[in-house]
Length: 113
Length: 116
Image (cartoon, rainbow over all chains, first blue to last red; front, top):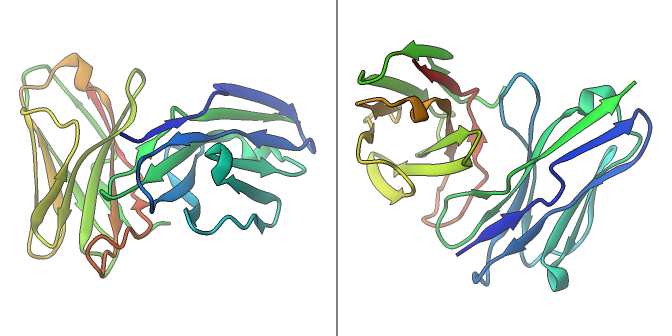
């Protein structure tokens, strides 16, 4: 069965610091997708990124970047120059042969001014 | 705004009661998923419908049921409610234009259920 582990329960940083959120997954699927979602205090789940298991290229989107390493089953998320608006709970998730998403427990990020 | 709508936003009810949560997927999306987010269990998949038919089932209790209507909106019915059913219930939709194509799921704002 698939499993997603986000070992960091809570992280607190000061504005402008860089922060990396870790995600490790377990899967038996040969083809799968990995996702990151953001849940701000308002509660909605916002899609951030989707990565195919065959595509190990790192991706950068503004201050956000993702590092996918199949060899270590990790899909880490880095926020550069963090801002207060980045404060949220971030979820990593896996989607394999079935279409359901399996989520990690989430990492609560607090960015202090 | 993801394009997925859910009503109501908040629901307060008593133990033993029955409630219905409603979800309208993004325009053109055929697949609807229901997830439950609770403090102890985290985010868990409940059930998926594709074009009106049940496609996959997760950790959904027998007291819970769902359906997807011809206009593709979906309803999640929760009955004989218990205190532990208090949670945030999310609906998500995806295109799934090809079976098993695993397209991105976009989430609605959720329905927060409180059972007293």
